[in-house]
Length: 300
Image (cartoon, rainbow, N blue to C red):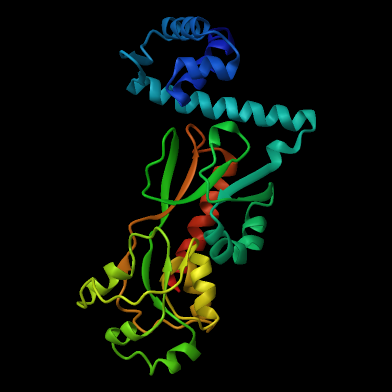
């Protein structure tokens, strides 16, 4: 059976070209010429008896057979690489590195990190906290939890958590503002803003029928977690993302005076990983843990 396996160099060339959707970039990654990559893929297609790529004018596109083949090849090459690292005594294969944003890490993931490590016990879980979308193809990060629209180039993404926004403040600030029995009372409060959030105060006031004008000015924060912390300190009312404030509301650090008036956020949280690694043990462990945590979080 093994004498029918395609040559390893053709599989490596195909995997890189399929992942990058570029023979030129595949050649750069593997330190080969563009011609060598092209020849390897032609050899592979002849061996398999099927076309793996559509060669367009300035780009290549996987055929249906090519996409299916890449899923298999990427997974098997990944498993071979991990096992080779284990045999060499390299602990990279045992390390599960997850990249996520500053706000999500501090307000949602960090309080659950011990449970993540317990659930993924075969791996040494490490966090890469940054608001930049790291390039998973570089191999330094295994997966990412991104706050976005669900579409990211050259990777796979699964929506794990939707989000909404609603006003929150400390109990002390609520009392100082007279209880905030009606949304219109917010027009006399200090409002805390998260920079760049499309589901903003203007949108929320429109949702509750107060129009889009006369919105009080207030501090603007680059991170949602910073606006939440300011609200906890009693500095105003934050239009906060549900994921970032749920634990603070449960603990009594914040109250949501209009919890029933929620505006759906334009973005949500996605589990993102490399193409072909859907069934990789690291991704499976992380996905299963996230599913359990999100179910418990939403049920609460």
